[in-house]
Length: 110
Image (cartoon, rainbow, N blue to C red; front, top):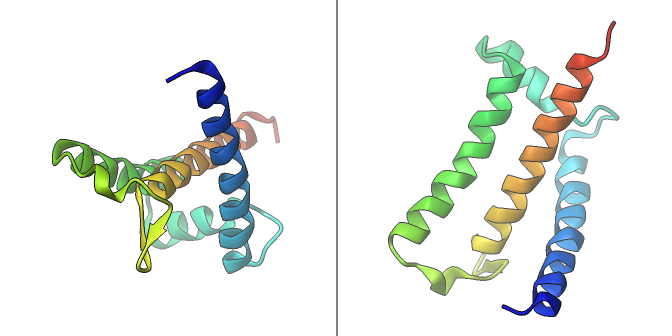
């Protein structure tokens, strides 16, 4: 892939990731982007950092399965109401950002 094409792909993902964060963030209707993670942590007794990792690994596992099965036909954002590989990658990257937010939040002296 040429550098120019790669940059276009990066922009496509960055735009879609922002769209997904806005859309999915509304589901939780709070100012704290980590509130759902903290609620899951409280409910399960699992530390919030591990909750982030579990949610991230769900998407990584789906990507791993698709790659191991050479299932590139799902290289799309969504098809017939099912998220494609592009969305799984975007969701994984967003969960990495939530993990970064948690680590940043945790490192601040309170």
